[in-house]
Length: 418
Image (tube, rainbow, N blue to C red):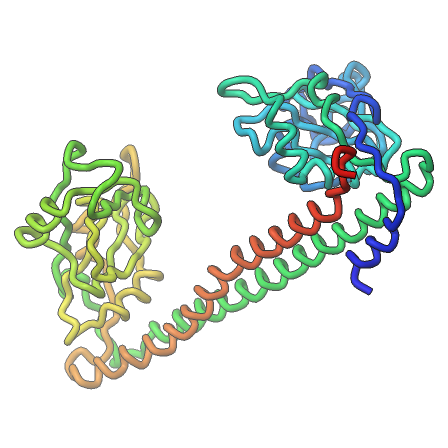
């Protein structure tokens, strides 16, 4: 019998009452703690910001501590309390829950304790449901900082199964928690497995890349990139020539390899492309500022790139393959100029960067060796890329699955529809 079917049997004939949070428990506001109060060891403490950055749904140990003297002045959570961060910069995060399963711990301001007699993880899971989120939105106030008051939270109703039989109610709540915890544990386990697989494949790729690009004496000549071809860049685009929407995406260093947030007209694109330097399909674009040495293979689709920050080598592929350059760029020792506002890779320094060219005096043999190296490394790159792209998709899928069953398990009929 599946978990959901088992729960349906458990809930068969069970009465559910939707009670306001104010009738289920009481709210206790935190006070007076700041991050500067943290010490190496002492009394356990939680700052409201850590609920967003450090904790998931439940916890029994803190990441921070304060002095015993300060803790005596603060509100303290105890086992089975639900902790709530009551301010945030966005509506989704405000009132993020943390089921506390540890010993006494001090809490900061901008968070509250909800003290009750229910299963705290049952409440935490419910606070994540679409039903609760929709109700919560009705009471959010503030402009830049979004917040919800304890008085307004008290009005939101939650489903309490078997309210006249606390023991039975807790049994049902515990079973719902068990099912949802099992799903989140499975997601965490799968994520760990995929992450470990990705790490192993990346190490394997790095090993073979370094090995294949390390040639014996006599097999290779170290040439400069300036010997391979000249450094090129697109014609400068002025800010007033860009727009938030348009025909051709314009990639700045901040959006290089990502999604463009600026565009140029097709007229400017065609004019500049035909009149000035422009990459050929397959050319390897290089970031020359910010994160130095990031690369993108130009796919030939209409696009334009920020001058001086995004460059490429106009190489002859009869001598050095673009794909060979692409793998080499990952281990290239760039001559980066430091000390300015941002680090920069100047054209002269790019030209000085050395690359191993196999059998330079035998073009046919050199070409064959480059193709062999690329074929091997491409296989590893395809595998690692597939894993790297598949990992967030798989995690998202599992999270959606959890959210679906969470909302299903906690969508008890409300009085108006019973």
